[in-house]
Length: 170
Ligand code: HEC
Image (cartoon, rainbow, N blue to C red; front, side, top):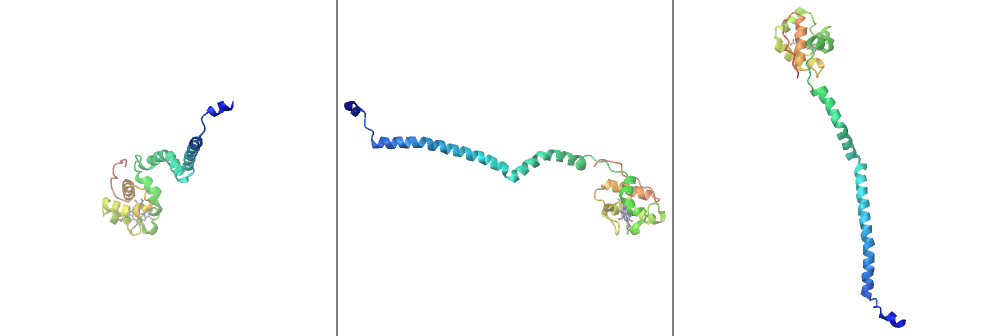
């Protein structure tokens, strides 16, 4: 029995070290990979938790809808409002009553010297403003065409014979 036992090769110190290293290396590698995996997952969650990318993502998601709406309202084809509509909506605030010295609609004597300046000049003054007359009657959303329509309407009500520009989409 004892004889047999001694036939087995003796475990050397270097073998012990190798076995220990081998046994240690595998678990360490596994732990390393698991930690890497967890860090990777955590990094993904952190990306989502950061408010800036989330806000950007939300913006990107809602943007197309907003763009379509803005395009429809502001850059879509817009037909100029007619002179009567613009005057009643904006210009009449002063020109109906003659507030602040505005020439009254229908006051031929008051309009005559202004009409004498010519349609183009009146349009220019209405667009840029003159003395107490605010630029575009104080409504910056009015187009040049709408101002021209309004000037023609007001002046024609007051003795002029201006032809407003043909309606066009801007
Ligand atoms: C806040 C008051 C006010 C509003 C609103 C207003 N106007 Fe006037 N407008 C005036 C006054 C005041 C004058 C007289 C200015 C002057 O000659 O001293 C005037 C003068 C004018 C004249 C004559 C300019 C000239 O060269 O003699 C035109 C044209 C005119 N307005 C067009 C318009 C049109 C078009 C609108 C609307 C889009 C409008 N106004 C809205 C106050 C207003």
